[in-house]
Image (cartoon, rainbow, N blue to C red):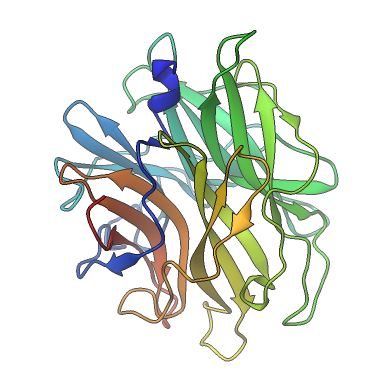
Length: 332
């Protein structure tokens, strides 16, 4: 197996479906750049430990027009995190005029990194259009946006990307991008109705030009997914097959302002990365100290002791968002 395949979104064994929530929050929404929103974690291993990229929005944002940007934090042990100064990528540019979130960072074959991110642009006729855009960096801290849109469509909004390397006998490495997809403009539905918010995939030979694969990877089909299936975290497994964690949202009009949905984290398994079978149980349910309303946007890394840690965005009943975590129940 090519080493790049194992460099990101790869685990030797399956992290499984049993998770125990950690007591302390990983990233609190308490800084000048993230006091209003702290969302969408993505963690990678680096030589010194771990770096987390996440969406932030706060009162001391560098540009008044920006509605959100990508920040980062560092940890030596994936437990205690220190926020790094400055903004990694701000909103602006094609496909991301007003805000960006849901970063996904991968190392590149020739060195450096590429970040895929969901960009959003508010439309003059109302609503928000989202697409996948990208940026590159030599050191993971200073980023330069790449021109163009990686995945977009006139009648579809794409978001929450996760990009995996694939082997190919003929052409070397290929890329598969999993993403959330929803109709644009959004249709109005009543609570409990399905609204075609699904997870799809696209493939690429260069990581820049992606072609959608036919069909839907994870469809809405269960009551607890009736508002959305969203935010895939896909892992290629050394033991064979793929594990995906994803968010399922359902309308919850009874909760306070700012928290109109309940979110939970579910899982699925695939032998080939295309056809997926959902696991029946909830991996991480809402209802805890940090995630009384929502647990969403999972990201999984392995720990030195053989366990795994899942980071996810958590929303309480007051509408405050933080990055929380859970650890696999047993060592693998």
